[in-house]
Image (cartoon, rainbow, N blue to C red; front, side):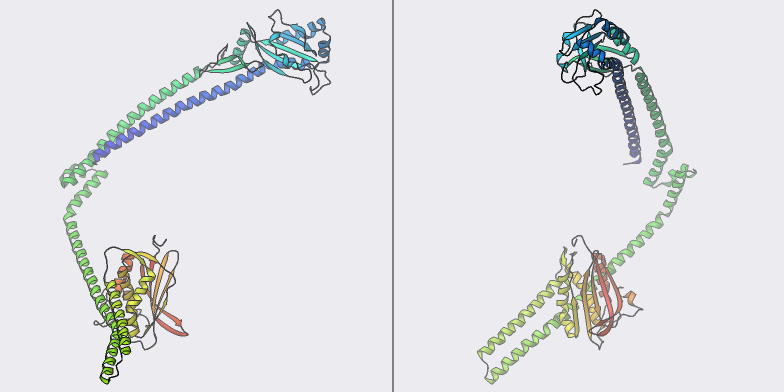
Length: 570
């Protein structure tokens, strides 16, 4: 995608992000208003319920206090109208009570005062007049014309301080929820209040059911909230949102124009100059002191140096090709050297079996000439010759499997690779009177070509063998393995006296050898290091060591090969 396309994509992303941010912010503001409205409604609902409780408290206090009175208990059993006019009727006016009933201990109404209001005593639940267990209760009753709140308390003597004794009657008061009562509530709450038959589900209305003694809903009291403040606040939010939208669009527009004229046009000029390879297009930018002026001058210098860079790249390419060719020659030489060593090993492996076969054949010929050749002797000799032939065939198979490499990598078992290496070199080591001490306890697997890994080990062991060529002392080669959490180690140690400190750091260099040119080529250790490091991400190091074996002190070189624990092993 070109710069122009990226610019328009950037502008689209900016506008999109702004639109999303604006929409999200606007939505959050509306949600905050909704939450504020719900919180306001919830708080006002609690306040309204508290107001209703406070309004009802004077009636409940009246019925509670006047029922807990010895004279009232006496009046319930022996009604006295004069006493009632003074002690009941007059307090009714002070407490603004509409109904008063007194029930004796036989659940009969002995006194009623209602200021000429309709008789609603039949609407009171008679089960509330429990004469064995005191009952305090309040509920609504509904007549044809009025909705009345009833408050009931048992009449008890003052000595019954806990009010758990047997009632001596009941005192009942009633308050009509008239229009005047509702208007008084409106003055207290400063909100519109109404009584309705059905519940109002308007979001601006708080609705509470008014229950009878049987828990059935007789009516609803609805409080309509004054939300003029929220309407003003909502309008302010809308106005502020539009203002922010306008400012955002103007800001983004100026940003787009600024980026186009200050950034995009100079960048297009730079891009065109690079595409057509013409630095003359940058003349009007070269004189500027800003970043584009610096870049244009750098591009001009780039074109001036282009030919030189191309020439340098060509020289580097030629050097890389020459190095690759040299490396191919090294690999070919390593293969030829390995082939020569394999042929020498085969000769060592075949020498003893061929000698045995030759001895058997000569013995048969002598016995035949002497006339003492027997059938049993011939059979035994033939079996021995067949055994030696089988050994020779197995030797050929071992070397053929080693030389037969495939392009695909396989899973390599390290113990198996080391044992195959030893099998290929065993006769050479024996012929050179070299004792091999092996301690292979830990095993390890990795992915690769087993034959090239065996070749790397053969080169290291051959180096140890050659280092002891002139050694008159006991010739020893130790091969040990170990493994920790991160690395698998193979240590190959000899008794050849070690490597000179002056050359030990160079033994992995190609063509470097301390042997006669007819004996060594100087590429064996180089190829071993190359195989282990580049193919298997391993490490090869060498050091001179001194050690004790069977109560004798020996010195020699120790090669340490380290492989990282692969995912196959883990």
